[in-house]
Length: 487
Image (cartoon, rainbow, N blue to C red; front, top):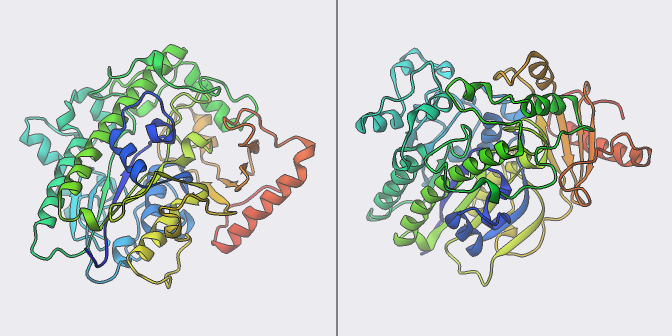
C-alpha cells in the first residue's frame, strides 16, 4: 500500500526501561512489546525531558522542552496556541487520542484530535464551567459494569487500591479494547485516510497493586547494586527521600487508600517491585490486543508503531519510590519503533542519546512534512532499521520543582521545589546541577548504577566545567533561564 503511513504511538506511564524483556529483564512477560523490538528498532538511551507526567507528555506531543511549551510542572494545562503533533501533520490525516491526557480539559477533544477517548477527570484543570459536568468515558464504562468510579474529590491513583478491579475492567484493558475496535472500524472504511492514533496509558504508574499482584515471585525480581541502598554521596533531596522511604514512608497519596508497602526491608521492596511488574504485564497484554488487531487489518502493510514511556520508576533503587529525580531509572526510558511496512532481517539496536523532543520531528518527516517548524528535537527517522548510533548527541533533562503533591515531609517538599538541570553525553558522563543542593557527576560507563558521585573530586574539575558549558549553551539556545551554579 502506498501513500502516507498510518502512525500508532503508544505511551506508557512510569515504565522503567529495564522492566521489559527486550531491555534485559529476565523474568517479566512483555511478549507484545518485545515483539515490536524484534521486528523493529530499539533505542538504547532515550531521555525524558522531565521525570514527571505532564511536562514529559507535553514534550512528547509538541517536540519542545518544558520551558518552551509552558508545562513546567504537573497541574498546568497546555495552552491552546502551543501546537501538538495532530496540528502539525499534513492535511488529510485523521487523528485520535485515547487515554491519559493530563494537560488540562481532559474530557474534551482538543489540539487537532478528531477522535477522543478519556480516562481521567482532572476537574481542577478545566477551563470552562460547563466541563465540570462532564465525565471521562472510562467512568461510563465502569458504571456499565456495576462499579462506581472515583469521585471528583479522589484521583484514580487514590481510588484504585480499594476498587479490586479484575484485569478486564482496568484502564489498560479498556484502552486496548476500545483502540482495537477503533482500528478495525477505520480499516474497514472504503478508502480510509492516513491515521494518527495515540494510545496513552496510566499503567504501570502507582499504586503498586493490580489484578496480577501474585504473578511474579518477589524472590525472582532482578535487582542491581543500587537496590535498597541509601545514596550517601548524592544530593540532599535524594537522601531525604531515600531516608523517608527506607524508614517505612510510602507514597502519601497511595497510603490514604491503603496502598502501603514495607519499605524497611529488602523483602518488602521486592514485593513492591513484583507487583509493579504485574502491572507492566497488564499493560503489555493490552498493547498485544492492539498489535493483533493491526496485524489482522488492511492497515498492517502501511503502519508505523512507536512505543515509549513518559518517564521511569525507581522501585526501590537508591531507596527511592516513584520518579522526580535524575537517576537513570527515572529519566532513561524505552523507545521502540516498528515499521510494519518492512520485514527486517534482524532486530536493530541504536546506540547514543535521543530525547523525547525528537519524536515529533521524526513523525513529521515520516509523514512527508518539511522541517519548517520551530521545534527543539531532531528527526531520528534515519536510524529506523539501521544498526548504528545517533552520533555525538548530548541529552538534556530538567526538573522545575513545583508543589504538585506531598512527598512525605516539609523538608522533602521544600527541596523538591528547587530546579535542576542535567546533561548526559554520548560517552556516558552525566552532570546534575542545582544552585542549592549537592551537585552530582557520574561516569555511567564504569558506574552504571550511579553509586559514586564524583562531583567533588579534583581530577574531574575540567570535565565538570566542560559539561556545565554544554548546559549553559543549551540554555541559551532553548530559552531556558533556570539558574545554574558557578562551577
